[in-house]
Length: 332
Image 1: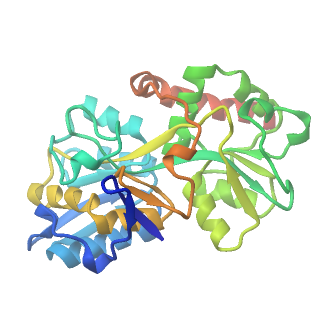
Image 2: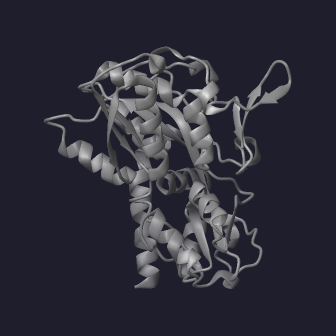
């Protein structure tokens, strides 16, 4: 159940989808199409597309992939742009697109309700949702687990650790950069020396834990864990006391958008009551500060590392490559 918390008066109210109030561009009848590039979860992407089309009459053409796949496709299409709206699982990658001058400035509907810090000063990145990474563990291997990041190099976790490939997972990439800029390399070096494996991107890495191939996933994306646990998989998740990076997932309008008005309407829709309820049901953190959910940890319950996004952006790719090198060297 999603709770929409209204600050005054102090009470909570759940708005069903059919009762969502009218909201500017996303409520108007449109035509044509909008092309959206969006990362997982696929079920959420499909529901957002269906909901937007039902409200506006505008068809949504999608490309779904990892952050790395989306960025590669954008690069391949530079000479002939196709995408109108791009959503990534990495705020730092969104900032890189901004630095390259690729993004259109816009003030979406409900911008005043967006979580503090989840919209940039120039209104080019809109954090419509967020994820965080934690330690996902197999409860048949470790019935309980609460080790901090610095303790994962201990002998009890020898050959029991995996990490998503940070060169493929945007959320893991930003966590690595955030952790290293705050704490240095000592803990990652210890985990790598402890036999930490890199099975692949988020899906493959989580599967290594659910099957018991390893006991714990370092920097596992939280919404995947909550979803798998709800399906009965023997896993659980916690956020180490040392803090994690909460990663807003930026929605961005490209300056080259062939369907600019429809792109703006789609971004408006992302911050509607209906879309934010879909976000919460997908186990992501909602992008609006007045929206809470009871099916996962809320933002205020997660110990956080304060990210220096500009610094992280500058070194995220290099840090991700180093994690792979460390793990390869210790497993090779």
